[in-house]
Length: 114
Length: 115
Image (tube, rainbow over the protein chains, first blue to last red):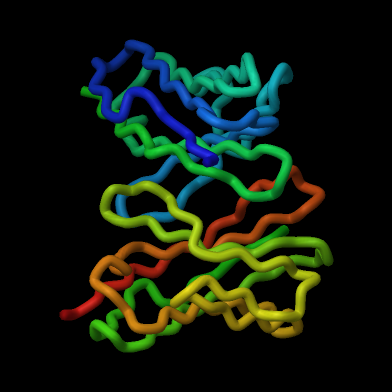
């Protein structure tokens, strides 16, 4: 149980375009979803926390207009990187939390902006 | 503010031997949880073990156990009978109960296992 999927697993986009990443909890209802960014050989950096039906809470230094998060249902959250630039290239990971404190992680999405 | 510190960027262990990964944390909260996550080359985060702060007994999961020293704010992970599949990045993480379960991660320790 407690499976989280992410789609796509890899995406390449051109500079200036937008890209959407989906995060789904497959077998449980996620009251809260989290989005992380991870650079090679580094730790996970929390970008934002989203609760179903409400606006996401962004961490300090994360541009909310650039990284749009929508948590439309209890099983789906999306991260849209708008007007992507090469410096946005990274590994993006989502996680989902049900009723408990544990987070279940998706497999991640590698974004490359050319 | 809460912090998690892993002071060992890299560790190495011989197959079948035991290794201990260190983690210290800082929080003024009394109700929190501690976790160890494993991230293999696939980059899928896998929960290894969790510890509730209010529990005095150290958590164990098969070959994995923790040494939780609450007063010292220390939370080390011991891997016994190391296997080649244990090679991965290991992250220590802290979650404060009344902060929506937000995880604060340490810098990570890269563990290699020698055959």
